[in-house]
Amino acid sequence: MAPPKTALVVDDDKKIAELVAATLRLQGFEVSTATNGLHGYSTYSRNPTQWVVTDVEMPGLDGVAMVQCIRGIDPDVKVIYMTGAIDAHRALLEKKGREFLVDVLRKPFSQDSLVERMTTEQRRLAS
Image (cartoon, rainbow, N blue to C red; front, side):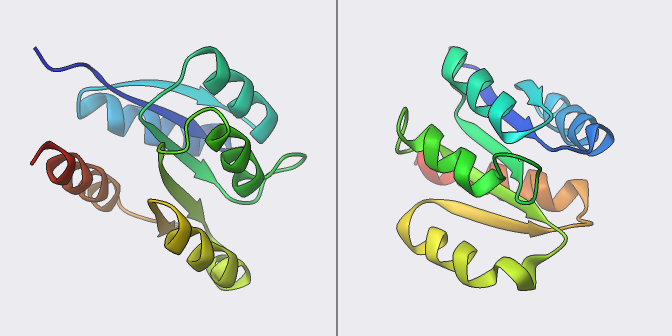
């Protein structure tokens, strides 16, 4: 039997976090949520996941800094950044994309686009 698919969803907009989490649960993921970067890092450190789906802009510890901390625990964690301000973060996100396995979704995005990105990566890793 295959191990469960796991994800951590981090967004300071609780409604978005819950919508993304519900979408992933329908796809068979075990999902935990957090409402900011510090809470996300703390949650991940207690219960590591295969995926981190995170907003970029959050008060306190932002999504990019949180993922950098998480990579200290697991440098191979798969990451999807969500942002409505992609142009403001383009250079940084492109750099992270070259360094690590990351993807970026522009808010608002469809549930299908999120699922497609994650399942494509799951299939690639399984082959």
